[in-house]
Structures are given as C-alpha cells and as structure tokens.
Length: 168
Image (cartoon, rainbow, N blue to C red):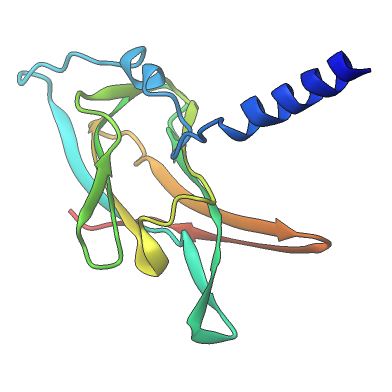
C-alpha cells in the first residue's frame, strides 16, 4: 500500500512540474515548409493586418478574461502555391512579441496552417495583432487570414472571429 501511495505522489509531483509551451505550433512545422524564393520570380507582394484578442475585458476595465486564439493562414487558390514571408505578433502597445518564421514558407493550393496563442499567453494583451507579409503569383487570389478566439469555463463558452485586411 505504501508503494502505491508513493507512486501516486510521485506521478502528481512530476505532473505539476510540467511546463506548458506558449504558442503551441511547433517551430519544426515552419522549417518543413521553408521555400527558396528567387528575386527573379514575378510574384505580387502583399501585407495584411489581423487583430487578435488574447484577453478581453470582463465586467470592467480592471478585470480581463484570457482567451485561446487560433490564427488561420489559408491559401484560397485551388491551383497556385503561395508564399508567406513573415508572421509578426505585436502586443497592445505595438511592441513586437515574436516572429513565427524567419524564412519564407509555402502553402500548397487550398492548404491551411495555424498559429495558436495559448490561453495562458497574455503577452499580447487586449489589443494584440499580426502583420503578415506574402507573395502570390499574378492573378492568384489573396491569402485569407482569420482569428478565432474562444474560451470555455464550466458551462459557459465564448467565441468570435476576426478577418485580416490588406494594408499594402
């Protein structure tokens, strides 16, 4: 009986020491998608802005509620591969929090990938946002960037979406 109790305590202690990864898309995902772009390629350049809410106000300006945010990066073309050059995450004050990939990545026709901002990651605050830079072949539809924010506590759930706008 003592051995079983000792094992239970050991499992609980080891489980409590686990550190949660913030922003849970594995960086290896980006390295598998690296694209070598030539300056000779005749690709159209674009830049998009996406608002994200990792926190929202609840009841007053003094209380916030944390949210999980899924950023969806979508190639809307059914024939062309597109290239994402940068995905930069900024906090409420416009200070860069992190850049998700250092080299261009590709998305095959109709492919989607995601960036997840974990509920415990409050570094973005109530006014966080992304800037995406991208290249597409001439005549190709623009990529679609969406944010899906959600949270569930007990039997209560909250979810809403945002869509990026092209700024360049």
